[in-house]
Image 1 (cartoon, rainbow, N blue to C red):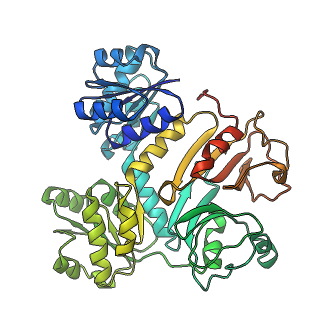
Image 2 (cartoon, rainbow, N blue to C red):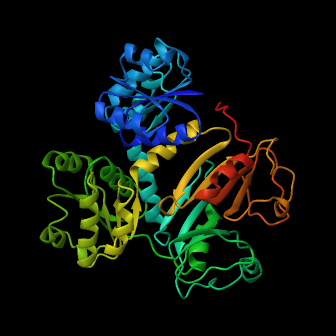
Image 3 (tube, helix red, strand yellow):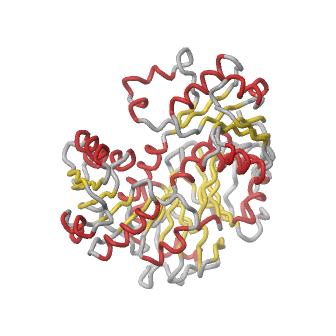
Length: 458
């Protein structure tokens, strides 16, 4: 498999880092000489300096023999043109583009991306992906993190375990007896900073961050069982009225949640765009780091503050300030992987890493073999894998109790013909099943091998 990536920024570099580590032949293109040199110094990948939409540059990158182009520069039009050139001149089979401007994605113009016009096979919109994750977090505020999968049948919750949790200090194998008809699998925890998988004879303790697989229709019951059943926020203040902030506010306006929304934006032009786009939300021109402005929008009565600007420091500090002024909960967009470790100590409740969301979404379409998705947990200490079992998998046909997983791996759910199966030791995986797996970082390669990973992508 040969992959060309146009754009060596955070997203492009992240994709190249993952794919090259898996032995895939990667060439990355960027016009910035420093970014190109970084790729050459740090990754097992080729790097070409130039514009990814130029035919001569694509040719130099090996487009004639490429199986896929991933265009993730900062400019939508460059990404679209790169896909067009890759299709028209080099006949690259698969073309993926990051497109951020929502006007391109309006259903009214959907024919734009038909094969006869702009032949893009997969469009990734970071603002939409991030916005949907934020909305899901708002719907279930009791979870500190939520991971959804493409089939939408199963979600994985990360839940902080408190002293009054009903399942604390109880062997996991007894949960079914204590709570009949409960469909949930506690796959692992982070305990005192260490990620670990839990076997059926082990138990969760107060202070753990538990990783729980659950059918979507049982999410509220599981959160209630953990003592984390919380009502969705009704009064929301958003710091940042850019693409993500406007998307979240617009969706909340059109929902039945009844939430009231106020947006703060320190760029006058962006604030004006937001004010014209919103129906009921209040848009205020000003800086979310100004205490007086937060008081003016009644931050002390707000249920949730969302730091959604393009600046990590602003998002973190505005969350801290909002909490000090009485806001009940907060949430921040944070791109820098090292920031959450100290931001939690400052009082930031939850985070989303936009870069990780975009990289993960793209990797679903290029991930080798039948590993459809990989989702990082606990700052990379553990991962969730969404995989399809093939006939050749060592898992197929055996009771799970006979499979040598090793320490650090736990299967949380199996989806078979849209039916969710919460696994036990006697459960047998069948070919075609989709399996949700929790693995500590050191065991991820082992899990991939269990699913007989190959280099056939399509």
